[in-house]
Amino acid sequence: MGKLIINSYAEFEEHVGKELGVSDYHKITQEQINQFADATLDYQWIHVDTKRAKKESPYAATIAHGYLSISVLPYLWDQVIEVHNITMLVNYGIESLKFGQPVVVDSEVRIKTTLKSLINLRGTAKAEVEVVMEIKDSKKPAYKGVIIFLYQFK
Image (cartoon, rainbow, N blue to C red; front, side, top):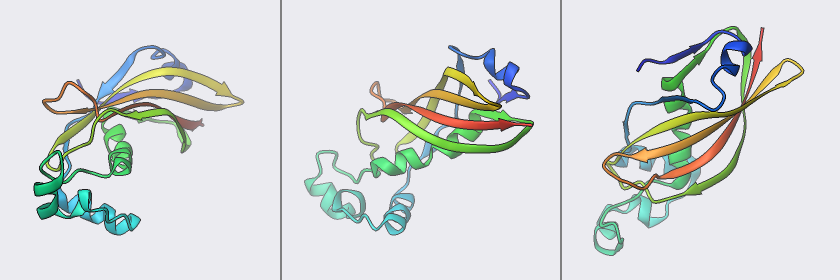
């Protein structure tokens, strides 16, 4: 299915209640986990100590930081939608995000998105997007939540 192209508020509004799209899969590697640990100073062993995790973790491997799985959202979102004729896009908030299960190292994740609502706030479009991060070959998602973006159309 290609990337959804939106050119105006009116076009965006046509998608309320509908699936916007699904991203490609992205593999979460140990290198990415380690770089995230460096950026956030979160070196909990379950994320970075591969030998200990192999022995002591219930997953027999390291797992991605929960916030790492959220942090790849903009990268995956960019694969789903392209909004033209805007002067600004702001990540406005996250509502009711719940983690379903950890992302084990070398798992592949993707997002499935639905436009829950779109509200015109004096020329700024407030888009509430339901996001499910799926883990390849798993029935349970990594997380589900509602992400809020503000789009300022020209």
